[in-house]
Image (cartoon, rainbow, N blue to C red; front, side):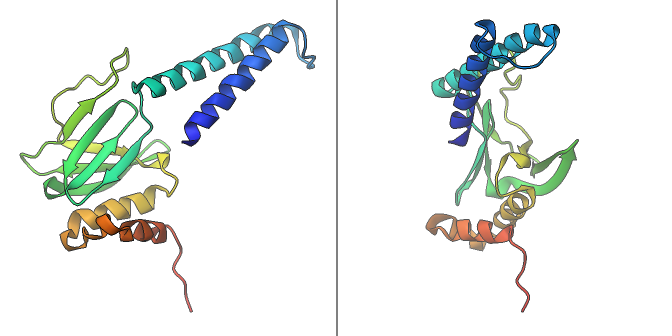
Amino acid sequence: MAYRGSLTLIAVSSGLFAVGMWLGQFDFPMSPGQALIFPWVTAAIAAYSVIALAWFAMGLLRYPCIEVSTAGLDVTGFRLKQTVKWDDVADIVPRADGKNPEIDIFLKDRARAGVEIFYRGPFSPGYMQAQRSVRVTADLFAVGAVPILDFIDYYAFNPEARAELVDGRALRRLASMGQPAVEG
């Protein structure tokens, strides 16, 4: 995954910058205050990246993904996984939380999403019970928020089309959802 490579490069470059500044190997034009603070800041960034890589490797954190099947969808966030059956979906609503587009999947009256929490730490989710809605942070996905919204909405409310989820046609549909229509 790309995040592993990115975090590795960030850890190495930040660590090298901090060590190089402390050893006097780098000579950048900066004020004495900056020369004092920058190595500590980059060392902290390197430490954060190394810790994040270790947590990802141990399974304490997972990169967000959406797994779609004929039975339903699994929405995996950094700290938990929520499972929803297609028959339990009541509504799908786009939201904007600040500058981050999100998709809320609301469930029918007595339906609940299954919750699996795999991160136990200081910022772990506080709820173990099943949830009445699922929130997808859509800007984490390369295809974009609108195609993800249309994709989930299409399969939630078109049960006869869910066979496409098995044979790869769904991937072609998702890829075409983000493309402009060809006029001719």
